[in-house]
Image (cartoon, rainbow, N blue to C red; front, side, top):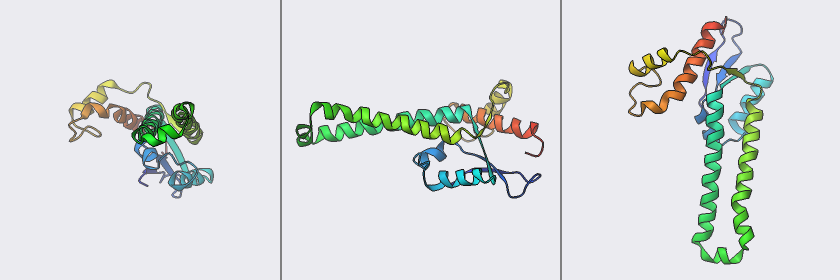
Length: 173
């Protein structure tokens, strides 16, 4: 798993400040009970890693969970509908409950994610400079560089600004 690591060289060479972008959670398939996300949680619990997040990342992940589970529910219902013998083999109530059952999975994943980031340090967006944001946008600074779809990068730009401000304002970060 690729994570963005900001080593805390000044205070402790063995501690890492970790900021996970939305794509990390998606790539891990929202598996909080195993794999890389679980391993990171172990490092966080033993003090080796400090997890940082941002309201934008949290909202993006929650939105992706809802969209991904909704798409899966539609695919499941369409797969059953495509094979007529399956539609005839189950009751109408059972067929209609497929979507509701999968949407319950969305609630479960949302709760697991919220629990996962509950101990994270949230970097605030309040007070970030819109002028600096547009300077980066028109100056083609990260995350806007070499990107035809620059407007889609505005959430990432705000996240980057919040990280920069934290590093500037936090001694030893």
